[in-house]
Image (cartoon, rainbow, N blue to C red; front, side, top):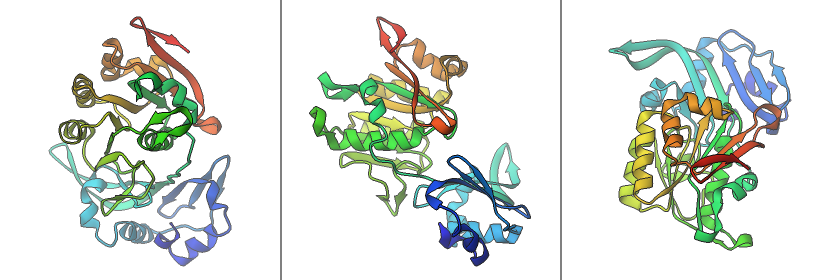
Length: 300
């Protein structure tokens, strides 16, 4: 990450245990805020709007135009999988964002690959008898560890788990924001297993349909579902005989049911397992889990 920042910024970061960093908040003419696992650090460094534009330009490999579509969605994803949120002066036409000028803030969310972190969800998600998985939604508040866990889960079911005699299965991953596999020039920079095929920078609904039609996956994976189009694509995949594991925002059954598209999947009993993760200091830990039994969701 340091290569994106100027010398003054780098000098202050070198005094911080970067392993603990989860977010870097950069705002024009304001102190940079470093968020660590259990604390927050305010740097003396105050970047100008030109400094921020220089940082963004480096992150876009000196080709802002190549990243224009991502920028219009409010973020870019770096090759290492780090996600950079962007704010500034939005240029909009016909209810569509066509650019963000005078970029004034960057929020760098640090991506971390934590091997074996998905072990806690295996007993809820694996259908050992069929060497498959249950259709599952993993939910948590933002920053609750969903993406990190799903990445490790993909790796494990793709490679196979010798300890429990689970043979590797073919996974189709729709990585809309490039945060899970973190493809760089077509090659994943994270370990997502030997039987995983990835479509990146494509909407989840289109990507799921493409993978089902072209790659014959055993399992389809998508991060942060919630739209009507997502729900329709999941219907399509499941009706095609493909299992699925998905993530979404929320921390309770009540919140899940507030989203009519997720509620539709629940009402139609398409989802067989629902796992809620804790947020904050306990992120990644299971808060509660439910399984479908005789058309009723029961708590484990």
